[in-house]
Length: 415
Ligand code: SF4
Image (cartoon, rainbow, N blue to C red):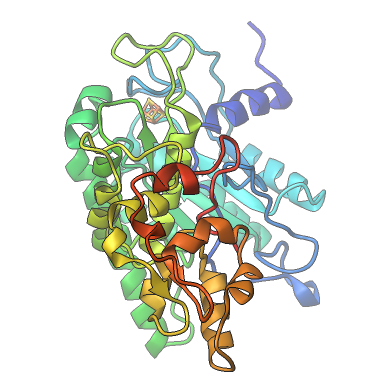
């Protein structure tokens, strides 16, 4: 059989990488090639970050080095026992593709992952080689996200961060039991050990750079991870709790969620259907509540039903507010920022605007209306100079009043 062309391999390996959601490029340090030095940029005119409607970054060349793999993770289309067409690139071929795409302005960087060939060490060395050639031989200043192989030697894991803006290791499943069942070759302690290595290297690099300006940077955009949703029995409360622990223990920049999608030739241990995509959306909203709205993972869990599942028809912030009515209404003219951030329909920008505006004058309902998408949905939860909900907040039938009509969900980040 003839060797597939570069284009055919690109098709196979780009398609094989699409299941990984952890590729957003936010948060790295600024570098550019102004003044004719080097090539590429992580910022600036003409380079834009494009996000798909589900929040995934789409402006990176996102490929696998190879989809051959010696592991047999049940949920993965590239697993050893899968019948997919296989392909592989050499490190130099990935470098050539990245530079060619970059020069045509198709991409702003590279997201590179790989199946495991021969061993974790061998695979990690190949991934690092791509980043090394780009940085050292081509002075590439664009964004690089390297997927890190937890089974690789800690020294290799640490080397990856010297070239990459961001490194990531997927925890894959929210629970250790799920990982053991669905990814029998993987080990939770190894994954967490590699994440610890990366965290330590990031902290050490930051400390060193405070003392020595030229100390090498280590993964300036930090580390991230991904969890597959819906492939095992973990509830939303389990997932949010696990994400909270990961943020705390490993200083992660982001936890990404990927709704499990049934794959060709699926293993019998997997569910036949993918979870509703809106479940993934609710988990991302929960993630924002924790990162920007002052909620703890346990509080997000309180918005869930007795089985630990968040409602799909309303966002978790509204679900929480409906359960904890005693925390409302909140007086927009007096309440502290934390209390305002709990009001469904008030986003961070709106809260900041309210706090700035109320220094100048007493706010009325119309003032708040100008800052939000729908003041009707907001009214049960706030007090203004000319508005008090009286019994509205405690109405038994409040949920249908404030719940969005089918497609127009009350946006968590409105305004
Ligand atoms: S290690 Fe598991 S998840 Fe990664 S490519 Fe191999 S089979 Fe897929």
